[in-house]
Length: 636
Image (cartoon, rainbow, N blue to C red; front, side, top):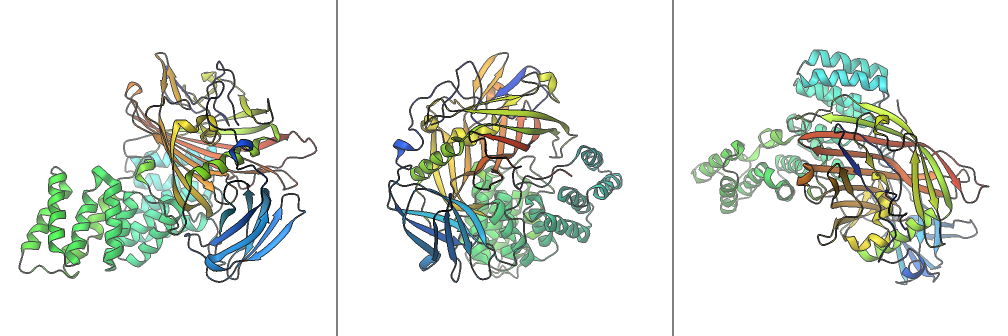
């Protein structure tokens, strides 16, 4: 099991991320307490590490979670290469292997019309006699990018400087001046999707919709899962009366990035325009549920859908609820007009009624990222992600397998180094980021093994904790090691875990798990410290776990509730993880690639980017040489 250092050494198991803000009296530290208590050790006594043989089932599926059509071949190779097995899929696109021993395997899957996929498979004995893994296949014609690097390329300082100048002009509505800077940035880095996106946003603000569409399409050609470009293109297609195109774009956005209330509202509008009222109604209901205090537009659209469906009484109740729940919202006044039309003898239940059937711009525009652009990602409880409907999820089993995988990842390593690149921005009230302050640090992590069952991580960096070394004067510690501590058995009792099903991350099959700090347990993994003392900050979040290897792929966290004593109303953290491989290709350590933090503190908003690169790993087995990590985005 993972255990902590002496209590006088504050750190969180895993990497140490140092960021900066503007308040010299405040520092923030996500730390791990000394020693351990409770929980159960990883491997060994948990049952997941037993050597009992199991029947291994491998489910082969589309990226949307449904079983593939036709047959696939699954090749299984042990980590040592001494065992090679092959099986074809049968019912429900499942391939079955009998009497498989616990251990790590390479899993290669091929099928006609699909790209061949290769992933790590981790099999643990004990417990159930059948062990099921999942892998997603992508069609031959599918554009690359679903499983590419977790974020678009980072801007080099000279490029960022030009972009910052353009953003400042954009913020002041000086569009010609902004275009000059953005076009200069485009010449400097024609392959940077964020530069193309800014040119698209500029054209959108100027109502040059054809040019905006071309730019957003250029973004997606460079980076197919660019979240903001997908949403903006979908919105633009709605405005240009192409609801079929909008549905295609927005459904892709939902599949690869999840959906908040805005995405559901745009989808509801698009489906309503296509007269697919069943899907329109479902998305409008989800939008209203997720939007909460912003639900007025979704509720109005739902009322229109019900009226179009020939359900005037349900529509009436919906419009009346809008007026009751949102009496001071100017948009809600449209409900009065809808009620008058319902009472009019000339009212129809068909979608030919313009005010009831064509709400695209009226319903969507006030909620779009261009007009009301969120300055930070939605709260984890305001997002939802697609999941395979026919796959059950046992949360306790998922925790045990992830604990075992996390422990095994660390057992053969002594230390590693990396380069930390940190960017800090203040964000204005319109959601537009300000100039970037950046710096690189050298970073070293020691992995100690006091006993065969325990691992302790400690870290050092040039500059230590001296705030003078940082772009601004607030240091944030220990953020990107969250993946280790969430699955440390010593902390398992601190959280309530809920498995949300089989989904995807970066095109890879992944289990989704929600977690939340128990209210009766004081937070031990996140504390803030200033001159007044320590503050324990309770978290909630969601983690994506690879459905084959049980490696942590992605984590997002939020405050369980605002911290009034700190005037901290928002603290959203996201972390992407990926493999850093040995040259021999047989062993890899799963490490953070990238982290972002969005914070609202004392009424001001901040955005941090944190990238780790140039890893050098040192193994207990010194005969292994080390390679750079795979798929980490390059700066341009």
